[in-house]
Length: 269
Image (cartoon, rainbow, N blue to C red; front, top):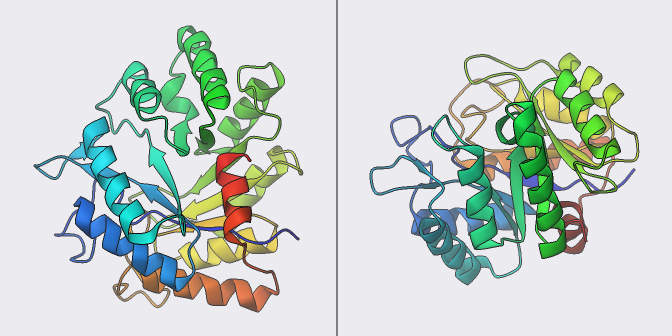
């Protein structure tokens, strides 16, 4: 099987210091966290930024501060992926606008957010085509098997003009634990040769990631989805989650990716 790429989502859009003291929020904290997870073996960082009040933001200026701080700390050791998550605040136009302004190496987009209704499909398709021509590697977030089918149709009809799009399969929800058995319908609906990554909510995260590794996928860990160690105690930090999943991968016999392989997955190179 292909080597496993490990991504980390260290903070998310909603959680703060009251949830866990080690959640990084500022540019300096994110840069320090980037170094810690890279040292632990991670290949990629899924980036959320916050405004001065600690609230979720898609402000390009705040993103640039964080990206510059991370790059100064770790250089090219990590692939950094910018999120477009709306959190019920941003419209599809605003979500696409931040990527057009930043032109980052990588970005994640949720099909259900950018194409909320049929009228949004043309503008989303134009954005996907622009991203491809601009060299922005897109990862498509899907939350259930029906959305997997929808994404495949969008690729087949040319709305997603990418030969082998990279999907993130999200297992579980923020208010409950995930189930590794729920991964199977996602995988069965996804073309075998197309790449995919899994993230999972709650203390059962490790079991879900083990299933993903066994089935040939890649993994995303971090405080955005889970604040607990596999035994149910509070996780020490994001780097501890990386070390745990690296041990899990080693036990399966699959190799972990090189930096170049991680860039190929996330940037579509």
